[in-house]
Length: 110
Image 1 (tube, rainbow, N blue to C red):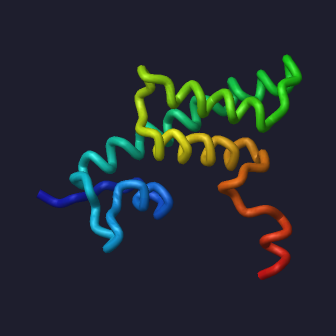
Image 2: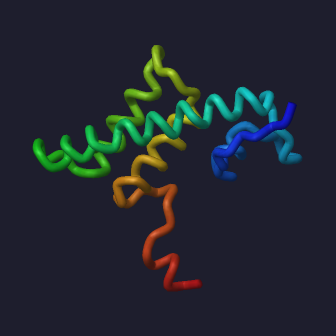
C-alpha cells in the first residue's frame, strides 16, 4: 500500500510534535489528523474573526487573544501548542500582525 498523502504539513506544525532530535513524538497518521484539524479550525475562524473586527470594532490583537483563550479552554479540541499555532495561522490568513509572524521590516532586512 503506497502512502499518497498529498497535503504538505508545514515545518512549524511538525515542530510542535517533534523532539530535540527532530523525531516525531506521535505517529505520522496522528500528526496528519491533528494538522488537518488545526488548519481547518484556522480557516473556519477567519471570517468569524474578520466580522468581529469589522462589525463590532474589536481590535485585531484582542480578537486573536480571545480566540486563543477559547482554544485553551478545558473543553478545547487542541493542545496548548496547537492553539498557539492555530492563532498564528489565523493571523497569517487574515493578514494581521502577530508576534509569531515576520513583519515587513523583517523582509527588508534580508
